[in-house]
Image 1 (cartoon, rainbow, N blue to C red):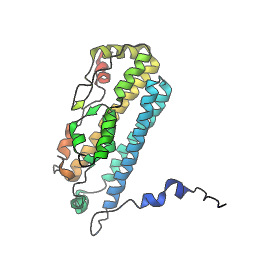
Image 2: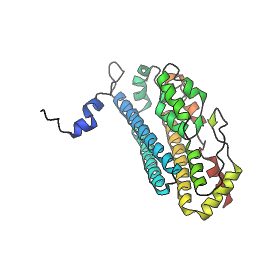
Image 3: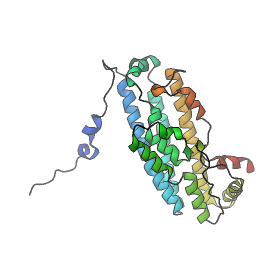
Image 4: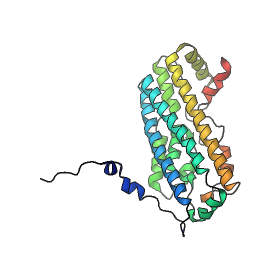
Amino acid sequence: MSQSKSLTYTSYLKVKELLSLQEPASDPEEHDEMLFIIIHQVYELWFKQVLHELDKFRTDLEAGKTWDAAKTMRRILTILKTMVSQIDILETMTPLEFSSFRGFLQNASGFQSVQFREMEIVCGMRSPHIIEVHKDQPDLQQQLIIREEESTLWESFCIYLKKRGYEMEIPQRVNERGLVHNPSENNQELLVEVMKKDPEAAVLTELLVDYDEGLMEWRYRHVKMVERTIGTKKGTGGSDGAAYLHKTLNNPIFPDLWAIRTKF
């Protein structure tokens, strides 16, 4: 009987396959395109891991597992800081170096990242456009539609607080563009009570604020990187580039958690 090959570092991580996935489109090949590809592939891997952790985080919340949820969110926050810091690497590429291969990207754009859109959907963001942009790829469209049927982070947190005896309202989904949940004065009053009387739940409340702030930091660094690289030019794929990204700044995903800051 033949003996199966032993698992090695290379075979376990599929290093050969991984290192074969960088295929520059420029001809002749431009040196800096390799960095551009690797950075964005690494981002997609981090998006995959964040989605993996967010799935667990929502499950932990809805099961009332405070400390499991807290541990999971702390991991997500650490990944998010790593994602932000990677922009420093991308900014070592000058506008001239980027323009040397930008034309070869054709319609490829970060705006088309399905996994980042999945992250936004889980956070409670909705826009018909992010579904429509994948009309020629029905499998990707379906992936996003399935995500839209899942609990948002806010819904899962409201379920968590209801299990702890707070009469939180799980707001009906109302918006087709932007956040699907409107702020609730009733929920804000209960959140103030949580912060004052329930230290365990208050820990999770602040971790959600950390996550919200981390996403805003990511968006800010992203838009500044785009501005310093292509200025006010249109983005690849026909997007509005930095102009579009500016519209996404300062849009909290947990407005109730920010509103209560004035109530202490």
